[in-house]
Structures are given as structure tokens and as C-alpha cells.
Length: 323
Ligand SMILES: C[S@@+](CC[C@H](N)C(=O)[O-])C[C@H]1O[C@@H](n2cnc3c(N)ncnc32)[C@H](O)[C@@H]1O
Image (cartoon, rainbow, N blue to C red; front, side, top):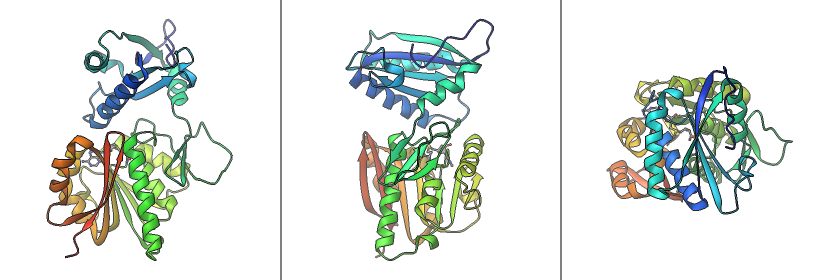
């Protein structure tokens, strides 16, 4: 199996890899469903995949695959294997019931190498580029953000992150065109994960940037990423269940890439943090959730400014109604 070597006898098992080979379209669907699974996971649930790898005949890990075929590999903590395997089986059954799930144990010493092989440098939006510390490149024209996600969400490869970054970039440009001094616009990233959006905002020129997440592990990895980008003095990070727990202040931009149910639960907190002329950038809403989500989120106070799609996901920019 690609990307997952079998543990040598006596080596400690750091992770379980479950791999499924499918037609390329089904592999896309399975990878998207597994991405949602990771995104929707409850904190501390051991059956949540630690990582997802998708290969085809053009990727390093998929050289054994025929054209038109793909492989999706989920990496799991051993404690969550049983539950994760039945959930994966149920997902695979909806796509290709005859497809087998191959299992491998990954030894401690192989884990980092396997994980890192999956995260390579990628371009994001029109001006940004994400490079993990192990895949650095010569400087080009793009603004480079060095991101090691660790165990946090936010590598730049998930569609919801891509869309949030694109909305951020678009609205930074619109603010500049309208004559704003971005250095005087503050931004709050709710559900910062690896810190990617906060770091992107600072790189794009936003002045005061704060990030918050309810997961201490995510904030630890975001702090490492601030150091990778020499931004420790430009971005303040906090662990909090709700933005309401932060210092009471408002921001010119509030960005949140979190599943729709959490966005709705945090609606009042998000509004309380939004300046009167502020912009709320949201990602993480599935297309099929749009009709229920939009009116509930907009309510009486907000109006829709921009709507974007990427894959099965929706992204929105909103502002306070001016009438
Ligand atoms: C989909 S990830 C987004 C990570 C990153 N901002 C990105 O765009 O790639 C959602 C993040 O929101 C965090 N989160 C979930 N519920 C939250 C809450 N109530 N308050 C703060 N953060 C929350 C999760 O821990 C996770 O890091």
C-alpha cells in the first residue's frame, strides 16, 4: 500500500492506515466525505482520522495505480480503529460496495515521513502560497506562508480553507480599492486551526490580527506557525470556546471557517465582534445547507455581499444592513 509502510516487528504502532482503491470519481467523493468527517469531528473522538491522503497515477504515492483509478488512505489513532473502520466501510458501500479496505500499521519512526510526504507546497488564491517546512522552494512572486499543520486542521488543501482564503484576498483588494489602509483594519479568525487564515491575513496587510480556537492542540500548532512566519508579535492567539470569552472589542473583518451548525451557534458572538462597517467572511457550509443556513445567519442584522462555491462547499461575505 502506498504511503503506509508496515511496522517492523517490535516497533510501536503510531497509526493505522486504511486504504481504499476506487475509480477516480469515487475516490474524489470518498476523499470529500472523509474531509467532512474530519471537519465535523467532535473534539477528542479517537475515531476521527488524523489525516487523509489521496493518490492517483500522477502522485508520488500512486505510481502503482492505473490511470482513472484513485486511492484514499485514512490515518487513524489505533484507539479509534474499530469505529472508524465501520464508518469508512459504510461510506465505501455507498460508492463501490465491492472495494476492499486494506489495513496497515505504521510504526512510530515512519509516521512523520508518511505524514510529511502528503503535505506539499501549494498555491492558494491569487497571491499566496503555502509551504510546509519540509517542502520549501526558492522565492517566487507569491507571498509564502510556512505552515506545519501538526494535528490541527488547515493545510490549505481543503476546499473550505481555499474558499475562505479567496474571500479574504478578494475583500482585502476591495478594501484597498475603496481607499482603506489595511494596516488599520483589524481581523479576528474564529476557529483558527493551524493559524493559516490569521497568518494569511497578516501577510495580506491586515493590521491587528487575533485568532481563537476551542482546541488547545490547534492553538499550539498555530503558535508554532506564527514562529515559522516571524509573526509571533503580529497575531494574538487564544483558546476559547466562544469569541464572547475574548476581550470585548470589535473587528473590521471576522472570518470563520467552521461547520454550519457551529457558525449558527456562534452567530451572536460573531455579530458582537463585528464592527458597524465590518465584514463577516464564512466558509464551511455545504451547498445543501444553504437554504436553511442563509436566512438564519443573516437574520435582521446582516446582508449578503458575496457568495462563492467550491466543490460542494459554499462561502459567504456578509455585512451589517445599512438601512
Ligand atoms: C474547519 S477547521 C478551520 C481551520 C482553519 N481556520 C482553516 O480555515 O483551515 C475549524 C476549526 O474550528 C475550531 N472550532 C470548532 N468549534 C469552535 C468553537 N466553538 N470556537 C472556536 N473554534 C472552534 C476547530 O477546533 C477547528 O480548528
